[in-house]
Image: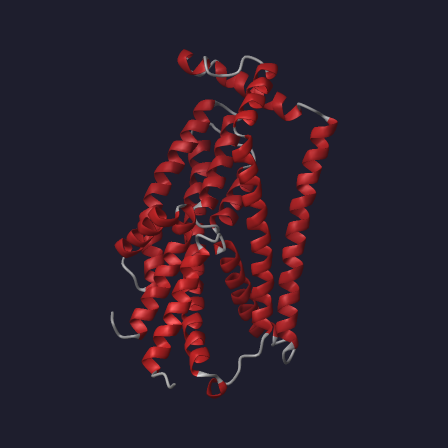
Length: 335
C-alpha cells in the first residue's frame, strides 16, 4: 500500500501532537523540557568548542561539560540539604526559635485581630504543626512522590537529550518518508523551544532590573536596607529563568528577608512585586510574541486555555506549544 505525501505529513502531525498532549497528563513535561534544553545547549556549545577541538570530539566535550555542571549542581544541592538536616539535628528547634523571634518582632506591628492568630510560644507552634501534619499526611506523601517523580524524569530527560545530541544526523535522502516528516516536525518544535528560552532570558533580565531598582534604590531611599540584597538580585535572575514558578520562589525569598526587618517592609515588598509582575505578565507576552511573531493576546489566550486544561504545567507549556503550532501553520502557508 502506497501513502501519499499528504497522508504521511498528517500521520507525523498526529504522532507529534499526540505526544505533546500526552506529556502533560502523564507528567512528562519536565522530562521533555530538560531533554530539549540539554539538546540545545550541546548544539550551542559544539560550534564554539570546535574552534579548539576538531571533529565530533567537540560534541562529546560539550556533553561532558554539561554533565559535569549538572552533577556538580545536584551534589551542591544535596550537600546543602544534608548540611541543613545535620544542623537541625545538632540544634533542634533553632529554626523554630528564629521564626518565633520574627513573630515576636511583628506582633507589636500587627492589628489585634491578626495577632490573635499568631502562635503564643514555640511549644504551641510545634503542637499546631504536628496537628497539621497529621491532617495532611496523605497530601504530603503525594507531594513527596510527585517531587521524586519530577526529579527522576528531569534526570532521564537530560540523559536522553544528551544521547540524541550525540547522534549523527542521517542524510535526508536516506530517510524513510515518515521519518523525514517526523524529523521536520521535531526541528520546528526545537526551534520553537529555542525562541521561547531566549525570550525567557529577556524576561528574567527585565524582572531582575525592576526588582534590583526596588531593593537597591527604592528601599534605601526610605532608610530600609534589606539584608542579602545582592544575593537576592542574583537569585531573582537565576530563578526567573524558570517560567512562572521561578518568580513565585524569588518573591517568597524577598518577602521572608523583608519580614526579618518588619512586617511592613515585607508587605511593601510583596505588594510591589505583585504589581510589577502583573505589569510584566503583559510585557512577557509581548517579548515572547516578538520572538515567535505572535500577538500578545494570542499567547495570553494560549496560556489561559492550557492552564484551564492542565493547570500550572499548562502555563509553562502553553507558549512553547503555541509557538510550535504557529510554526507548523506558517510552514503550511495557512497563516
